[in-house]
Amino acid sequence: MAGKPAWWRKALWPNGKDGLKTRQGRQAAWRRLAVLGAGACATGLAILLAFHVGQDLARSLAGGDDDAPQALPTALAEAAPAPAAQAAIPPAAAAPAAQTPAADTPFVVKSVLKIDGPIRFGQFYWDESQSQAGPVVITVDLTARVLSVFRDGHEIGATAILKGYGDKPTPLGVFPITQKDATHVSNLYDAPMPWMLRLTNDGVSIHGSKVEKGYATNGCVGVPDEFAKRLFKVASLGDKVIITDGKRLGLGGSINPGA
Image (cartoon, rainbow, N blue to C red):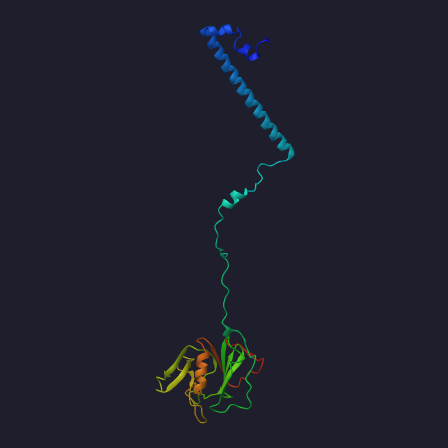
C-alpha cells in the first residue's frame, strides 16, 4: 500500500527518486546524508553528557565522596607487594645505662658459715652451697687474723692468715685485685708465692703460704695453699679486698668497698 514517503527519504531526495538520475542530484543526496549523520552523532553525545551530569548531581545531593579510600579487590590486594621491613632505630638521645661495679655498692652480709670457735692456724672452711654466682668481696681482719670470702653477700670461705709485722705491716684499705699468677715467685725475696692475687704495686698480695704459729709475712696476707687455690679460682681481676684492723661484720652488717 502506497503512502507518504518516510521523512528521511524526503530529506535525502526532496525531488523524489528522479532527482538521483543526474550526477548533481546524487552528490547533493550524499551531502545531505553526511549532514544528517553528523547531527545524529551530536545528538547522541549531548544525551550521554546530560546523563552523566545527572548522575554527578544525584551523587552530590546524596552526600557521596569519590575521594574516599576504596578497598582493593581481593586479587589486587594479594598481588600488592608488602611494605619493606624497617629496623627499629633507637632515639638519638637514648644512651646506655651506666654500669656501676658491684664492688662500689654497699656490701651487705647475707649469710655466714657455721664455725664453732676461733679458726686455728692452718685451718680453713669452704662451702659454696649458699651462693653459686655473684660479685666476690674479700674481707681481712688483721686483729682476728681471719680472711673471709663473700659471693653475692654469702660467706663461702674463711681461714686463719699470716700478716706482716714491724716495718713490713699489712696495709689497711680497699684494694682491687690487679694480677693473678698461680705460680708466682717473689723477685724481692726469691720465694714462691703460689696462687698469688696482687693488691699493690709494691708487692703486697694474697698468696698460699705455710700458715703456722710464729710465722709472719713481709706485708702480704698468707693463707693455706689449698685455700689459696680455691680462692684463686673464684676471684677475678677487679674484685675488692677490704683490709681492716678490728672491723668485724656480722649478719646484716654492711660496708662500702668503694669508699
